[in-house]
Image (cartoon, rainbow, N blue to C red; front, side, top):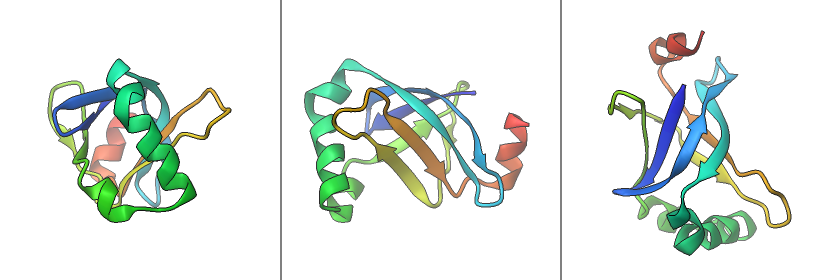
Length: 105
């Protein structure tokens, strides 16, 4: 299922999400970044991997939106792994309710 990643109202990209860990309620996949991702956000996510800044991440207002426009509740947060030198950006939506996971099965 395609999920759009936003920072507030700014589209950061889309992900064709799959179940990664059903027991923990984790779905995710490769992020196909939007132009805005490269403008300001990529450097923030890469810096966060080097030196965690959880308060800074919370101010971004990250959210996931499913195809019908409803927000995906990720109680455990949204994790973005963007490592310099690698071409793939991974995104995980953690703590997704098990009833929602059935849509991926």
